[in-house]
Amino acid sequence: MSRLRPVEKVTLWLVPGLLWAALAGFSARAQVLLSGDWQTLMHEDQPERAQGPDLGDYLGIPINDAARLRAESWDASRLTLQEHQCRVHVAPYIYRGPLQVRIWEEKDPETQQAIAIKNYISTYEQTRTIWMDGRPHPSAYAPHRFMGFSTGKWEGDVLTVETTHLKQGWLRRNGPPESDQTTLTEHFIRHGQYLTHVTIIHDPVYLTEPLIRTENFVMAARDPGNWLWPCEYVVEITNRPKGEVPNYLPGENPFLTEFAARWGIPVEATRGGAETMYPEYRLKLKTLAKPPSKPGAAK
Image (cartoon, rainbow, N blue to C red; front, side, top):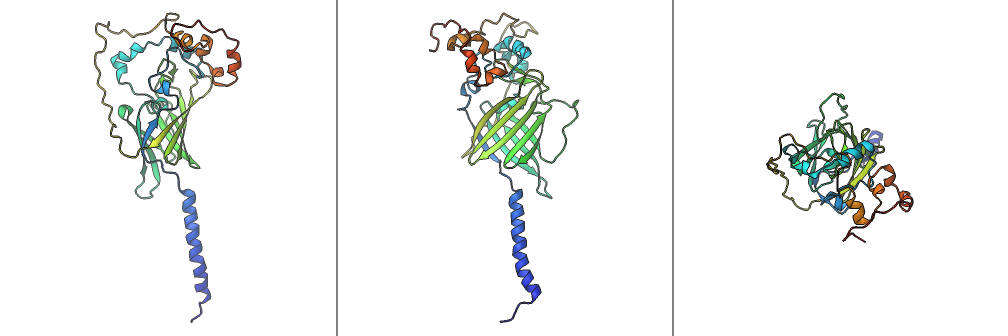
């Protein structure tokens, strides 16, 4: 048997080494795949996200007095206005309702590097773009949109997204507002067939602290098939005077204490604020007067 020359020996050792290094480098750069069709799980915050929260329930939201004043003027009949019937949920809120989410990557055909991660959201048929190519956010004078302007980066196996240029929206469907100065931080975390979506809302106009919420999704085993959300404006309230916008003036909303009376919660607590987010608030609850219960109230 012929002996290998020194160069050949080096080659035999070098090629596997280079191959191992290449595979190791590839593994280090590989990211979790978020692509697929995701169905929402409604077990978390179910009353708020399904049938909707009670009027006057602002518990656990770090709103300030300005937000509280706007929330107390809320009249649900406002949603019957044609301008509001098909109004899109803004990005910080849209993932909390009943929806399907399809996620895919758009890649550069030459380098196969991800340019953007796309979300198609069945509610109001929204396509959201999360730019992954390092581009900067636009000028403060750029238009604001329902989905805003989003850029993303991978932090380990977590996709972190920063969003600016959002339109004015709401924090809950019972009146607490969200301003157009809001910025949004998100974390998309996949664990097997489940996806956790974490949102951190920063609103210098209506919040005194960031509001953190989560939602969970499960990978769809088959195409859900309900991707379309056709919406047409109709006349829901006849004989309404032109230009009228349903609302309550300060102190005139008759429904604000129903939630407190129903559950025996001090009215002060239902008005929300940063302190209502923390466990220590339970000590203060013991010192607050409870409202008189109404017939049929929960016990």
